[in-house]
Length: 180
Image (cartoon, rainbow, N blue to C red):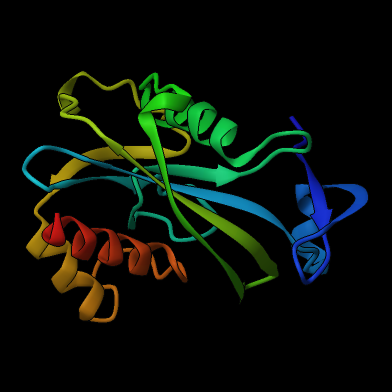
């Protein structure tokens, strides 16, 4: 299935254009993406291991769920859709907390990712053994202690994806939690 994205300008404004994922990544067209972290009552974050067949970051530990915002969608809708597709969890708009946004621009091989990213948190104590994983996207999931994920981030993304912004927003969320 071909995915289509709303094309944005470099300031994040809608251009009125809609292009395929392939064209956006080939030509470096700006578009939206989302990242979700599920955090349990112990402060652990649920990570997914990307499938070995993924073009970017195969076999790497990553955010709980996320992906590109399809044409006509808002970020929170993408979080709901991607969380269900990738790990089989139903979340609703009331479960989701928006924690920030950033831009990122990188090139890996022939893929040029120019993203306006939105970051979200869901607080939940889901049983990782009961999740239905989307095999073409996710090979496994696991809970990671707060201290371990902070160490991995600080150690140049040791064993995790080096996605710009995502992990920094998680760190900021943890700092905010400590003040509560």
